[in-house]
Structures are given as C-alpha cells and as structure tokens.
Image (cartoon, rainbow over all chains, first blue to last red):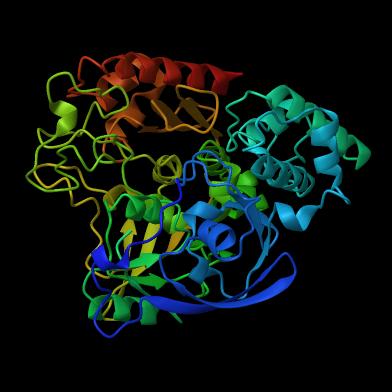
Length: 191
Length: 318
C-alpha cells in the first residue's frame, strides 16, 4: 500500500525552483524542522519520516477517514494535505492523545465498549470522535441539525452524521456510538 | 504524483502575478480536490502557489447589508457563521450536506466553486475523457457505460459530467457574485451564474476565469428572507454526492427561487422556471428541465427532481 516516490521517473519541477521545501511544525508537542520533497503528504510525513504509524493510510483519497489527525485544533484528512503547507502548525496524532498507560477517556471508552474490531480505522475514529464532541459544544451545525439558530443537541443522530467521514469495514459503529455517548455524558454535555 | 515546485504567496496580487510568470502553475488552498487529482495524475502542475496565508479568511458585512466571504473561508466556518445561519440558511444547509467534517474543515469557498467533476470516467486515467484529454472521447456516452450519477441537461455530445458542488447551488439561488484579481492587478466581478460554462465541444474549459485569475471573495446580496431549504437526494444518508438536489427560497406569497444540483454541468436555474413556482412543481420542472437529454441510466433524475421540489414546496407551506 505504501508507495515510495520515484524521482527518476517524475518530471522536473519548474526551472530554477526547488522540489523540496523546509518546514517547521509541532507534532504531539515536539518541534520538528525538516526539509521535505514537496510531494510528501502530512500522512506520509507522520508515518514514513517520523514513524508515527498510529495514523493509518486507508484510501489515501479522503474517503475513509483512517488518516484523521488534529491540526490547530481541527480534525482533517492528513492524506489530502501537503506537509510543506503546515509550516508553524500544531499537529496531534493518536500517539499524542493517549498512551497504553494513560488512555484518553475516548480511548478507554472505545476499549470498554469494544468499539473496534480489526482496529485499522480506530485511531482515525478516536481523533474524529473527540473532535465531534468539540464541534457540537462549539455549536457547529450538521446536516441533521433541526434549528440552525440553536445549539445542536448531543444526540445519537448528530454523532452518527458527524462520524460519517470515518468508515469501518468491520461495522463496529454501534459500539463506537455507545463509547462516544458515554464520554459525552461524563463530560456533562447537554443531550 | 509528478514533482513540482512550491511557494507561499504573500498577497492576492502577488499570487496572481506569480501564476502568470510560471508555466503550468496552480493555486492550492484546502487541497482536498487538487491533491486527490494530483495523486492520480489527472492534474500535474509543475508549480504550486500556496494561497493560505494571504488574508482572505474573513466574513465581513458589506455596505449594502450583505456579506463578503473571503475566498479562503473554510466550509465549516461559513456554515457555522451566525449571520449565514440566520439570514442565508440555504447556504448553511447546502454546506453541511456536502463532504465530511474533516473535508469541510479544510475545503474553502473558492475551492468549492472550482472543484472538478466526480464523473468516474474523468477520474479513471485509463478511460477516454474529453474533459481530461480533449478529443479523446466520452466514455460516459459509450455503449454500456454507467451514467446514473451524470447530467441530464446542459450536456453535449462531448461530455455529460455534473458539477459536484452543493455550496454552488445555494450560491446561485442567492445571486452571489464572485470577486477576482487578475495577474495585471486588475479586479473584476462575475455573477456565480456566469462563472461556470457548459461543455459544448470544449468540456475541458469549465469556467470563465482567465489564466492566472484568482478568486478573492464571494459576495452575498442583502438577505431576502423566505423559507430557505436545501434538499439533497443521494444513494446513502450522508457523505455522498447528490443524485439530485434542490436549493429553494420560497416567499409567503408562493413566489421564489429554485436551483438544482446533480443534474447539469453547472448549478442549474432558469428565471422562467422561478416564475412558474406558484403553479407548482410540475410547471416549474417543465421549464427548468425543458430540453433535457437524459441517458437510459439517469432518466429517473427528471422525476426525482420534480418530486424533490414538490416535497420542498409542501414543506414551505407548513
């Protein structure tokens, strides 16, 4: 699935311009200064250069959500953005959310509710799930929000809709939903 | 992905001037469509101009009482803006009907308007496509092709691709205007209705933008009230492109505006169809879809559009 760029077959960049760029960014609280091939996606930077393999490469086209990470406080598909576009940005991956010894509440809830089966989509699901609760708390509307001028409710319907960019081939959705609702409940978010 | 050089622009004028100096340069903002296409080598720019840092990320009120939306405002921020939710709810509804939360956090207002079709034959480099390789033929019109998703009106013998945007359909029904800057430094305004062009025999030409022209903002006229809705019909409940969508603004007297998505190479609207609104959905669709040339695969869209509008009109009366 991983494909190493093959510069010998690629066409040269515009005359006089560099095919690599310097970039400084903070990943899970650690400053990183790198010079990267312009083609390196944020996802490939994480996995291939920094060996943070928690973030998964699924479709590599923004359709499955396995590569979801948090950039400057927002969830994005790390496959559809270039690493060199993130100069100065703060990136949080699943490794920055919790560790086996100190699980984040969302990770603990996914374990408690068996919210994963093969586990491949799980890091992206957990990054998304945390962001979904923040998006609801921030009042950001979704496709299923009834009244656009009122805060969206924290309902199963809202969570399902907002998690729709993360696909699970095992079909563990019901358990994930239970886990997310439990975390929402313990955070005291209004239903 | 083909190799390319990369730079960050410092201002809109700087970006446009640079684009004119470098052959085969492209702007990049959210990247959610361009990088997808670059991975498949459907797009292969030799140079990328990153426009993220050029200050076009604000929504401001205009002197006329409307809103000026910076080209780089993210779809999430536009949908969530309290003024948009209150005064232009059709726009919020269209935005949240599109893509996923992750994509809306990156995708921009200008990028959404300029995204390319998701026609499966455009996306498959092994198949002929007049939009991707001019003159190579249209696979969607070949014997046995799958055209369920594709356009029923505004098409040509060269191309039946649809414009995929939901946001653009709402922008059309709101009479939004696009503001741009040219490499010369000159600026101009283009009604959204005039931004996209029909395929004719040049389906690779999709907009009226000139080489190097950069979209800087989209302006909404003052609010016009009415019951505003965006009804999107698709093959699954969420995160899919429209088979048919209806953007509607219906006034208490039954007059209003209608635009369709998913049926044409551009967001689709006709003034004479709007005029027929008091007569009901069938009368509107007789005008709006007059001259439609569906395939056997997608002829269902004609009836689906009428029923989606009928449901919209019934809801507006509640």
